[in-house]
Amino acid sequence: MKNHSFDKGLKKRKKVLGNSYVNNAKKKTNLFNEDFQSFITENCWDKVWNNKHLTDKQKSLNTLSILASSNKWHEFKIHITGSLNNGCTLFELKELFMQITLYCGVPTGNECFRIASEVFTEKKINVAKIFK
Image 1 (cartoon, rainbow, N blue to C red):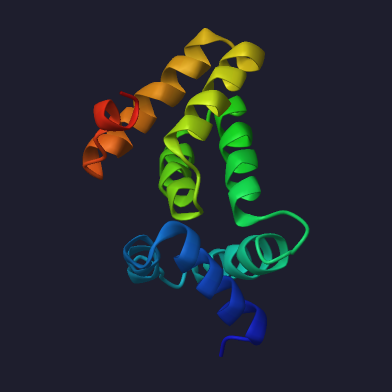
Image 2 (image 1 turned 30 degrees about the horizontal axis):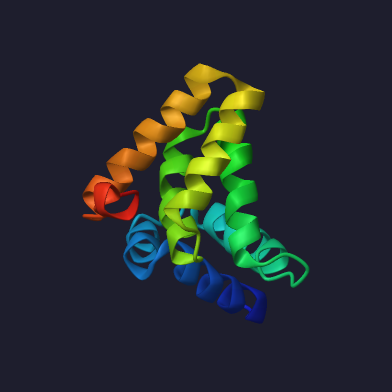
């Protein structure tokens, strides 16, 4: 039986990452990883993401910075979608990736831009139209 914290966390997780991604993760839940899924839903998504002092947009930018600096590229890609869902613009992401490049190095910045381009292609976001 799930608790109120789980339900609030699940709602936030779906808002940020999207229903499709979260429902797919739920399908992969089994007896081995169900405690982990409950843990991240309650702690990450309710206790941290539902705090009110930073906006979801700010949390997304922070999350992308942390994931890039720690080379967590699978999660980074997921959170690019989350950042778009939270209202980040491509201009903001570009500026963020330039700052990441400055502090983390060119290879890390290169990976940020490469992965973001993959996401934009998958989502059919016309970058040329936005930056013209």
